[in-house]
Structure formats: C-alpha cells, structure tokens
Length: 226
Image (cartoon, rainbow, N blue to C red; front, side):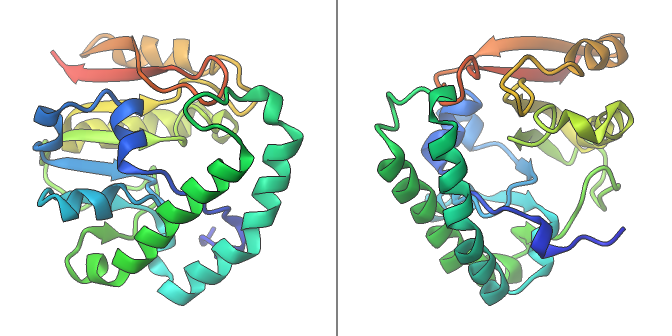
C-alpha cells in the first residue's frame, strides 16, 4: 500500500527533547546517527547547525515543502483538540501547558521546514518506510533512534516490529527506542516478545531517561551488539 500524506499527523520534537528522551550526551552527538521515522522534528536541523550530521528517514520526505506545510496547518488544531481532551494523561512540568506545547511543536516544525529542502539536497532527509530495507551497509551507523513510533504503535503487529528492529540493528551498532509505552500510555505489550526474540544475540536494557511528558513514559529501550 502506498504511503499517503493525508493519513499522517505531523508533530515535531526538538534537539533538547531528543537529548532527554535518548540520554544523548556530547559523545553520542558526535556519533554517526540515523533516526527512523523522524517526521518534521527539528533534531536534524539543529544538529546540522552545530556542525553534526544526522540522517533522518521517513516516508513523508517524498513530499514537497509546501505539501508538508499544508498538512501541518490542516492537522495542528486537530492534534491540539486531542491534547486538550487528554491533558490529564500528561505531566505538565517541563512543558507548562497547552499553549507552550503548541508553541514548542510549531517552532520545531517551522525549523524543520526551513531546513527541509537544503537537507534533501544534502541527503540528510531520505524517504524510507520501515520495515523496508535501507540501502546502507551493515553497521554503517553508530547509533539508531526511533522516537514515538516503534512500540508506541503496537497495532502494527509483532512481525512489523521484529523486521523494523532487525533492519535498524543491521545498519547500526546500537539502537534506542522511546517510549516503551503504547498509545494507551500502558507498557507496550510487544516489549516482552521483542526482548525474547533479540536477547540471544544482543544486549537489551530498559533505562530511565530525563524526559517524561506522557505519564510513565520515562524509559527507553537500548539494544546493543554484544
């Protein structure tokens, strides 16, 4: 099935959030990083401004800047209405309220859009949809990230997740997945099964992070080669 922009709800996060979500220290930021399902996050743009390179993958990168801008404008109010209805499921400490959340997300996506065409030309934004194979050689990257996609969308099924994580581990020496909850803010039902599949050949750890917006969403899964 072809990927359609009308089915996406763009929602971008910042470098500061990525650093907190994935426990990214200064040493990590200098690694060869690939980020899967990055969407309209400003992570890549902000890293590029610091002289560091990130390769971001997402199926939305097949669309033009104006198409993405239009989709962001179309869905912003829908997302904020949903956040308003479900605000009790979130912790409003680092982000103080709904207006600050909207400002943060729209700022991140504006930064992404400003960088998008430049990043496309520099091959920092590549169109790709998991669990399809990438064109990268084995262990081409030091670190692979998945923010608010794998495990969160458990309805995609175990097979999808196994294939996706397998491809990430093929091209990366280490991967980190955040959060380890599903969309109902419950521990992802896929996590024990994924641990069982990969623990034979890889080292798996669930680690606390300095980020909690979704209640109990303050842990990440780290998978490393033994």
